Amino acid sequence: MAASHAEKTHAAPAAPQGGGPRKGTVAVRVVGRPDSLEQRIYLPEVVKGLGVTAKHFFANLFSRKYTVTVEYPEQKVKYPPRNRGLHRLMHREDGEVRCVACMLCPTVCPAHCITIVPEETGNGNEKRPKVFEIDELRCVVCGLCVEACPCDAIRMDTGEHATAVDFRADAILGKLDLLKRGAASTAVQGGVGGDWRAKADKTRDETP
Amino acid sequence: MLEFLADHSAIAALLKVFFLLMAFVMPLASLSTWAERRQSAMMQDRLGPNRAEITIPGLGWTLRLWGITHFVADALKMAFKEDLVPSKVDRVLYGIAPIMAIAPVLITFAIVPFGSDLCVGKMTEIITSLEGCRRTIPLQVVRLDIGMLFYFALASLAVYGTTLAGWSSYNKWSLLGGLRASSQMMSYEVTMGLSLMGAFLYYGTLEPNAMVLAQGDNPLNWGLFYQPLGFILFLTAAIAETKRAPFDLPEGEPELIGYFVEYSGMRFGIFFLAEFIETIFLAAIVTTVFLGGWHVPGLHEDGFSFLKLPHIAVVLLRSAVWGGKILFLCWLQLLIRWTLPRFRPDQLMRMGWKQLLPLSLLNIVLTAAWVLWRSAH
Ligand code: SF4
Ligand code: SF4
Image 1 (tube, rainbow over the protein chains, first blue to last red):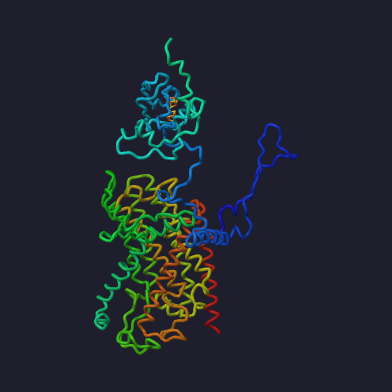
Image 2: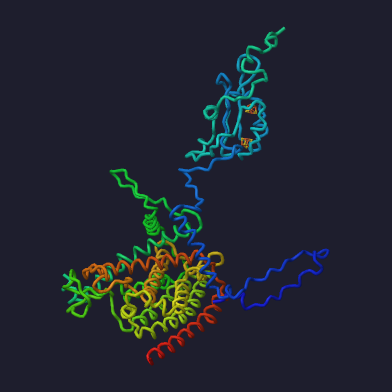
């Protein structure tokens, strides 16, 4: 039951002379087919192979020793910390949205999937998004929006996949959906700490 | 009841057919479809299909059972799938091909002895031999003197199923698959027949049950130890007959899907099932010829030497052990199927004609010389 290679002689091309490869040629290492008598009879090798697979079979049958399967819906692989999942919008200390509607993320987004309609906050010195929508079906998960944001307002660290939805419209996440996943950011707003409103330069508000 | 069956052997035969096919072969074949996927997964460090489960309605219990019920789900899927018949097929041949593939294997089960003879009227007694029995019921559907020849004759019919399927499908790939199947099956049939010739010489009979009786309950007298070469040759050739890896060229997925490309739904299911029934039948024949058939090591007609058993217990134990041997051989075939890579067609032919065939001839000569020497002394 020898396999066919047993009958061939190895008329292999001569190996390059003088040690290293000759100039302009590719070094070829000629490896002969294994053909000891034991391997040519084929049967001992078959038995060896069966031994290996049988070992794995029984070890996996009784103790899942080598089994690498993760039974997905029940068990999940932990994502690395920098995994990009669904978006979320972060909160300020007072629970308001951190986003100042600077329009950097919709500008940088290569998929044009972020829609922001800004509005005045009323205190005269900043804006906030009235509408903040991300179409997760169009998003290419590049993470550029997160990098562009100057005030840690948008993040992709939820570890969630874009989940299956029944209607396309359900895949468009609005401001409230995004805020629901959010949390207070530890970044310092405006660079002056939590009581920034009190410390703010009031003179700017007064028109001369 | 048993007396009635002993007198009406035709009815008894029908019952035996029903028991053998419906209670053993078919369930085992369907289970193999699941076992194959599960075993291959475990050999490859995966888990395999383990999610089909039964929920008992009112109670809310869920039976997972390692996913055994996958075969029910598969059967349902097959049955409800659209039966697609390509427009240019030869409808008659296309229709009978699956039947031609499955019928021969089912019929050949008739010669397999699945237990020792039942001694009617002495079921609960301890008997030392069947000599004193007025009437016996053999646990074998038919007891043919030409036994194994019947098997070879029918096994060679199975090639029609695959060849016709390939031919009638009007598809080049099916045709190539069918041609490969026919050349492979014909080549290996030669070795298959000749490799058993040594066993025939050794036992002096072609009748399966007589072979089992000749082997006795001492495992060292089983055919495996007297015909080791024949055993290996037969196993190899017979696995090639079943067209399963490493001999699955007729259905090599990368180059041609196989002779059944154009089949769908339950028609394909029948080809699929036929393959598994063939493996079970191969296991049954190897058990009969080389592994002592229904014999249990150390179990005589009256029980073990340290524990006497009534006749019915002996018979049941023997049938159970027979089933166990078959299960083991089915497992072994799955192990082989998922370990060895597929041969190339030229390797296949060279191995069949230039290596297995001369070896099986050698086996016949050696066995004949040995039988001659033994009879002279
Ligand atoms: S991840 Fe990329 S594509 Fe998705 S919203 Fe952000 S910038 Fe746009
Ligand atoms: S980059 Fe940040 S602050 Fe600017 S609009 Fe986007 S989320 Fe808001």
